[in-house]
Length: 278
Ligand SMILES: C[S@@+](CC[C@H](N)C(=O)[O-])C[C@H]1O[C@@H](n2cnc3c(N)ncnc32)[C@H](O)[C@@H]1O
Image (cartoon, rainbow, N blue to C red):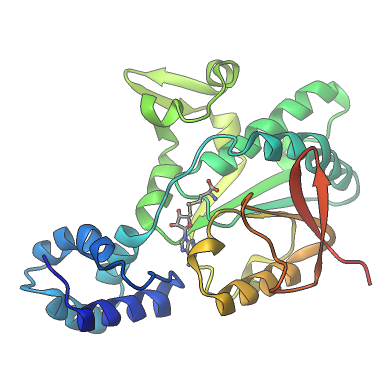
């Protein structure tokens, strides 16, 4: 279904207002490709009718449109240098925190289909095993994993992955150890699933109900947002991060130019960020 210039602007603005996602000018084809099926399913003749329905909608259609327009591309242990930095620096910091506070809190703030939070849970589990009996109880660690896309969150919650999904970054020894195979499906074992809680959450919304975290990952999502929204989200993360906590973003992302509240720390080729000490 072809989209007119005016229709493109209406849908583009709607998406930006409700999800923060900024569809670049000239990307009419992207909206056509991703929303035509929904348009037909909802009995609309054109994008104007879809937009009119969206304006009256209380949530279900909006969720479907946002779902269709999000890019849920993700990998297990995305960016080798990031996984090394987490293992060598962030996890030891979190283990130290577990000695002094009742709960250690981690947030995967755009978790897609779950690969990111489950990877972190596996790295944490490995670290605890290495320490042995003196390790803090695993129950001290909680990983909140959120995403705006309802279908991504549903897949993440089921914790079941196809061979194709597994082939994208899962290490054979971790596959053997942390998954059970059921026919063609690999299911994350309960000891890892139990560390992660999934929720649908829009990064445009207020972060304060989530409380304070020791480690926040907001990776490969801010690239889709406007400059103003990036700035607002960096500020919200800063407010919700422990004073000595860690923030991780995508390898191509940086808070520079949006806030000077973080200092960059390079660890084995990965850039991580901490609140600047004042
Ligand atoms: C490219 S994926 C990145 C997944 C993972 N963090 C990683 O690095 O592999 C981007 C994710 O951001 C989510 N997203 C987009 N806009 C969002 C918003 N406003 N609030 C929360 N999540 C959003 C998408 O649904 C998608 O799952």
